Length: 255
Image 1 (cartoon, one colour):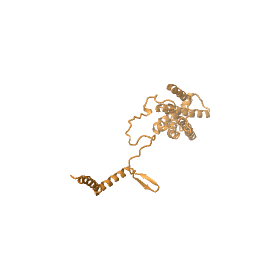
Image 2: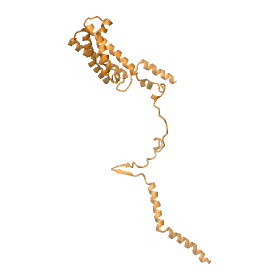
Image 3: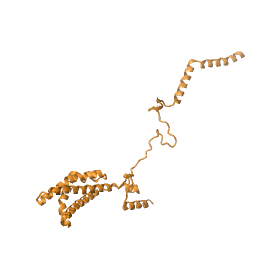
């Protein structure tokens, strides 16, 4: 092989490679690769409406900046949340414990019954005192007995000791007491007329309805307000000495 032929062979190979690089197929593949790189670098599609840009709901979420919370694509942590109400009685102490204690419904109903009996006895005592009659307990109880029976006998029908009556909302408690007065006091008047063998006078019936209504509805409303803890407009709770002692004991238990 001559020296000229050895020089011509590399030059021919280089010219062939140059010709192949300038072919249409090479240009198309180069343009396709450029389009793929541009699509990968393109931001998430947005919908422009006026001055605002709405993100496509199908777009992947943006990574959260440092300190802003967990990543949206992070797997669930598996942390089990247990409400404090399901823990032991010592799970929370202090003011949360004092405010979180709920009164037993049976105990609250017993308090309502005792207060109702005292209110009806007060009505009988006031009536006997205005008429100059004896004020012995037996005499007062004899006057109040028909109304006591009528009040407690109609209670299941009127819901006098139901959920609304035990509520700490004064409006619910007053409405429940008013229903009891409308049914219980007339029943007491009927029982009194049967016991005495005579229909009571109309003025006495009106006074019995009004006086018992004021005493019973007023007492129930006051009791409901006390059950709410005396919370004011600002949400502050008016405690009592027993709650204060309970708070101190819970603080010492923490130490």
